[in-house]
Image (cartoon, rainbow, N blue to C red; front, side, top):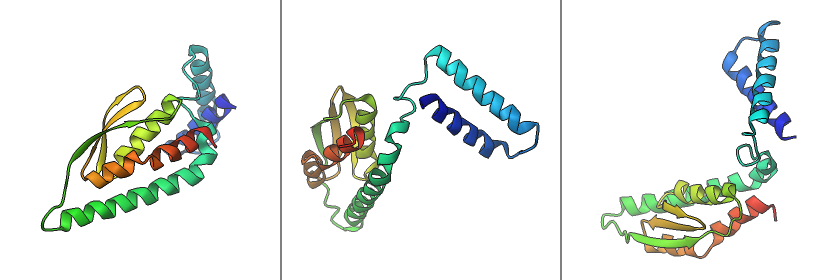
Length: 157
């Protein structure tokens, strides 16, 4: 399953970049993909962390939720910027991640950084140092809604 999906992704990527679909180039692309997949398998560099295909069905609910969160945060930061008093209260906060895998921790750290107004400044094991533009943004993060959502994405529960 893992190597088949890697091969399929690589072949689709090759097709998009190639732009040539002749009787010689397509089989050459197939052979190239087979060679790369066989080499990566032999080297032991292909794993579920580098190619998390098992998370694909969960992206159907996670990505729309993340897009909505990014939109809400963008609106909040825009209101702050447009306010003549610029009501910011920069805050550093430590956040504990409940994710169990490296993919889950990276997903959580990236979700924080993608959300305007917050940046994951440091990741140390399961603890993040996060800078928030406002204290309320830091408090929202400390409530753990995003942590639980990413944990659900990671674990599928």
